[in-house]
Image 1 (cartoon, rainbow, N blue to C red):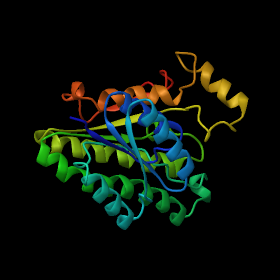
Image 2 (image 1 turned 90 degrees about the horizontal axis):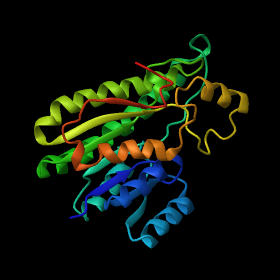
Image 3 (image 1 turned 90 degrees about the vertical axis):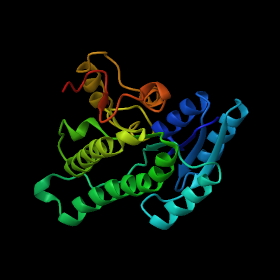
Length: 245
């Protein structure tokens, strides 16, 4: 029986790679998007043409009413079994000394609220089935600070802690909760980064390469599978060893 996988921010980059990967595993995937309707539809068409099953689904995951409408639709298919909380939240890159509380709090609130509210809607169905996979896309910047990324890194750090609490509370109910933390990944969002910066990252990376979206998707695919049932509360960096805890 197909499991239902919801990927928030699933139309582009890492999210799209995750959608393709989970579809290949036989899951029914729901590709959440806000504005990228054409990309979401194109991705769904590709997956369906390849023999999978995919549904684009619009919702701003920062909006509780949007989230409820999205989950109500997925409940028609039996509810969410796998939640991949991947939606990107914009932030203001500034050092602490120049940043306002409002700029800092915007990122913190958007990041944690979107994942909290989505998990809140997903978990009741998972409890009923005694099965569920919660996967939150974080960042190595939560553990390895970089200049001007204080809002982003702190928000992701809160997400890391949130996942541990879910793992502890929900484990007896057959639900796992894990963090996947990419380092620099080659996507549309990073393609304009200076070449010398990307080369510096590559040289400091033990594998001598920069991650692709597929590298992240491969990790998510395992954590979303039935084979990962005894793995919960983890933080998995996908960065070729550039961050070594």
